[in-house]
Image (tube, one colour):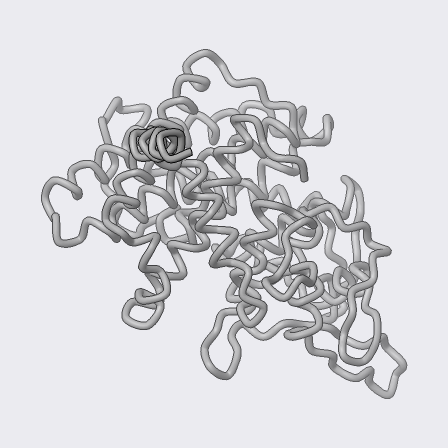
Length: 367
């Protein structure tokens, strides 16, 4: 017995250690671990970006149920008999983000695949997604089509409406979705104009100075997603034609321009290594998500050059993720939440978007 036991022990001691986690596994684990806090609705929404309806809060509830039950507000109907208005605050009284961008939560529910008839539990009773969309339409103002903050509302509306549809908002304005999305395309073109000029001039890069598209949250990649998704309708693709193709070309040019600047920052400012690496994960992950959604929703077929750009973005995301893991930042997210709360939020939200972007171009898990 003893020799056999020693032999087994020897085998155990000499066994090959398990392989280190891959970059996409690190991103998925970071997202699913830290986005599951039922007290953090913004994080829950980002977990849903990765896993859709399947994502659950740590207490076992579907993430969407936890968001609605804990954070949705109801404004009582007025004397005229209008239906109640439902809304989320931008932040809780303690400063926890709930919906820092208008319609972020409703957009998340819509894109997760919930039907409009689905009822969520609220403290006063069930609320359907159709109720939430109706409140979004009541609150919507056409100026959001020209605002960096409009991406989430545009994304939600464009996925519940079809070309030719309209609705009346709370200000009594008739909102025509075709006009709204045409304005949004013009907003994207204007925001990316400097990059377009750099591309046409053959410049290796256009510096980031919070100008144009860089003044948008997440570098405007949510705005690109909202606009590009509308092109899933054949009549929209025909009407927009080369205009949208040009915006895809600018985004691909931006990949090289922005990647060079991050690499230079890594070399020049080692003290800021973690923030720079987080920005690299943010950009490359959102880039992959944007073009993956465009392919899946609108039937976009990348050219060979664009396909190479996607592979370059995957390689850059993989490298940045592994370098970030080596700093210990993923393991220290809870500590960073106390000392650098915005950086900790980025580590969670951007990991979710990056994991989703990676999976869109690989073999995504069942949703």
